[in-house]
Amino acid sequence: MNKLFHYEFLDGQPVAIQPVLTLSEDRVKEILVDGSGTRVFCYFQEKLGGEIGLSRTDASPELSFDITLVELLLSEDGSRVRLGCYGVIELQTTDTHGSYKHAVSALRGALDLHPGDFPGQVAANQEWAGRKVEGPNISNVFKRTFYQVAFKFQVTKRDTSVGCVLAIPQPVWDSWQPFLGRPDLHRQADGTWRLLDDQSTAPAGWIYVFDIAEKPAGNGRPAPVEVKLVIGTDAATLSRAALDVAPAKAIENSAGHDAVLVSLNGRLRKYLPGLERAAS
Image 1 (spheres, rainbow, N blue to C red):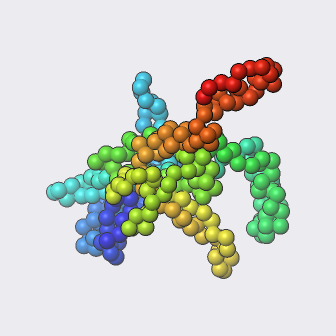
Image 2: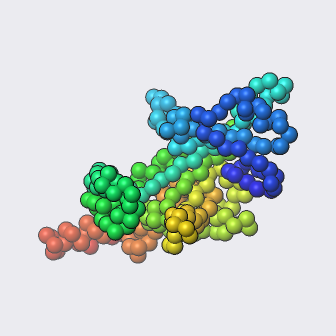
Image 3: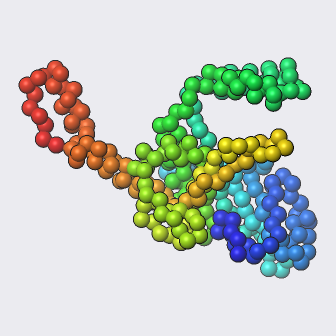
């Protein structure tokens, strides 16, 4: 038995996953009744049918999903296609200081000048790809991502959904650690991981941590993407790590004292040498 999200598949069961723009109702019906047992899924993405999202209300924000996958089934009488459960995929890349526009301009110019040897020219002039990109904005990645991730984990935690997957590069996951209190990871029997004391056997939220392999593939193909960690979690566990565990560890680093008060006391003593040490 294999799994994709919480969809379960028999070993060897065929699966068809198509962008919504390529769908034909007759073709979907044909696949579903051809006797092969093929499971049919379609997905929406910004350039492929548009993102699926939540409209803004007076009491909730507008949010959209990077990729929304949904299973297509036949109605009981076989006359119509109906929706099965859906799943959401979010992809968070690194955030940088500076602008990408200079790098894009350099690469476009190189492509115009060297259409026949563009890869070789980029390899020989790697500065083009990072021109005026000043480095990762580590703090901003977490602040910009965390609320959306927790929110989407929570709104997809329902019977009509199989959950939400967040895919992030290893450097982004590493940059999250201080903001989550560097939570303990516990390996499960199926090879996945859980955070803190969470032992859930069927989490609706998943974090896939990936990285680019150090060595390229053969035959001039690009280096493959390697999944380093698959972590089952939920909004409550992530929030506890960020809002309980990390602040507690910040205090621990100050030997149990109020770190802000210690800092204030130290600064003020430069101007008020006789300042009484604050009890903290």
